[in-house]
Image (cartoon, rainbow, N blue to C red; front, side):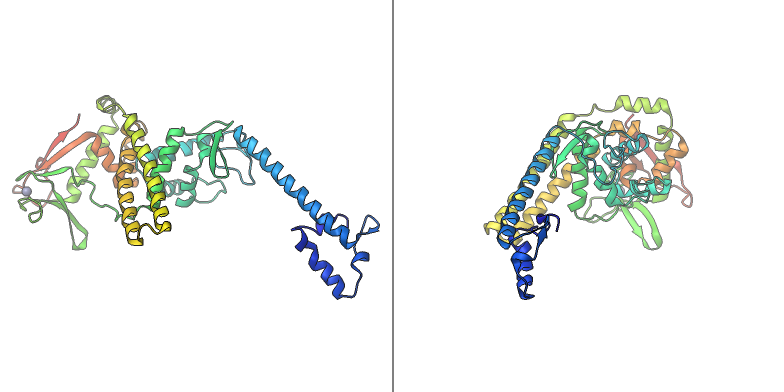
Length: 388
Ligand SMILES: [Zn+2]
């Protein structure tokens, strides 16, 4: 044997079974282990085991200290795998990847789902770090990493500003954490299929039109009587009005003059509202922890805890909207520049994205009753009330 510490990993228990085995085989434990051309007696072996163990504990502590100091100084810690956006040194940016991270961050903050961005990237053939496809899980994990905001983590806690360039801002990082967290433990909602709910008014009685699905996939918006106060006397084919709205929105957004006018008309972004929302989200996290504490204590029942957690979930969902709805001006500055690109984005990015664009420019549309022509779309049935 060339080093006793090979025998003493784990201290006493590391070598004791060996001594037992030597004795069981009829050997002499004092004349059985040879190191450096001399016998290692059982007594010496036990002392060496204790010393080696002590030394390795010291080394580990010293390593932890060095790592801790490095972390506090914001030094990068290159791992085995390269992190997306940076070279192996964790410091040099890979421009294409950094641009992709920025793009994904702003799309998700604009209300698009991580899933939809991952799908889009796979369609475009954007390779992930390993060269493979993007999964929602991988992209979501990437977007939640502090390192892309230039923050140094140690044992899962951000301890310093890192000595490398940030790809997104700390503010964006925090909002991404908030937005993607809610989608994680939020209950799944049925995907919406009626982008114009809330934008359409009945031309007879003035109430909001509701979605009306029919067998065979025939969708329409209708004035409904019953629980709502509608007259129940108006309906319009969903595609007609949805296509008209799409053409209008895409038309406006591909005209640079109109976009400028739209941007000028937007209310200034209100940072304090966002900061309040973030603070309230943090408070909700604390409340969630307290509920768990109370449950563990036995101070509240399981049913109580469940009810309280649902309250927190709901409050969180409301705050999510505040955070996601806010950056309207950025939605407008990140638009595809061609009508073709704009149309593709409209179709691919989903209803939440469509609604955020519609909301920028349309206050409401009043739908008038159908005239003599019922089989085809009559644009005169729509009265537009526009924001700009
Ligand atoms: Zn009506």
